[in-house]
Every structure is written in C-alpha cells, then in structure tokens.
Picture 1 (cartoon, rainbow, N blue to C red):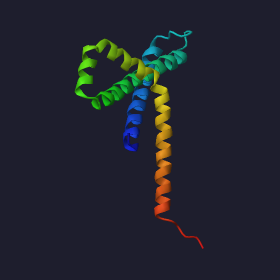
Picture 2: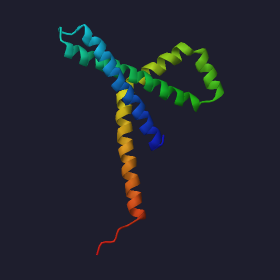
Picture 3: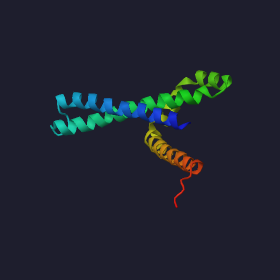
Picture 4: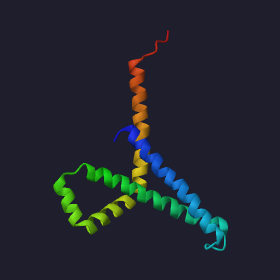
Length: 128
C-alpha cells in the first residue's frame, strides 16, 4: 500500500467515525438511556455508532482489496462458501480495526520521515 492509499484509507475511516459519532450521539441524547445523562448517552452511543460503522467500512475496503488480488478459483470457492467468507471478513475486519489504524498511522509517519531523509540526502545543505 502506498502512502497516498494509506492516507486515503485513514481519512475515509476517520470521517465515518466523526459522522457516526455525531449522528448516533445526537440521536441517543434525545432520550437519555445511560444514567439519565444526556452527555453520557451522547458519548457512549456516539462511540458505538462512530467506531462501529467505521469498522464496517474498514472491513469492506480491506475485503475488496484482498479479493481483488486473488485468482478466479479462490473467488469461486469463496462464493460457494459465502457464509464462512462473510464471517471471516467481518470478524477479521472488526478485530483488526484499531490495530490496523495504529499500524497505518505509524507507517505514514515512517514513510514521511523516510521521504524527508531522502530529500535531505539528495539536496545537502552546506554550512560553513
């Protein structure tokens, strides 16, 4: 995955976190369910909605990328065994969501630092 692809993935998933958080937080704060507190309901259901839908979007993005690289025979077998394929994709996507987000952030930072070092080596500044 290139740096650009990683940034696009991160922006897409984080924008779903923000919009899901706001939408579900506002819906939950209309009739508080957590300790009769609008703030607690907003925060809890906002996190559930934001991270939940973002994990689903992440699962879709990663699954499509995975299947795109596979051969026709694998796709046929995965289609025949679709309940297992679906379950594996969902569980893998949900359980790997946060670790993969952290990995992407670390990878983006390291690629940026690598590009910076390469530019410095290509254009050395001379100080006398």
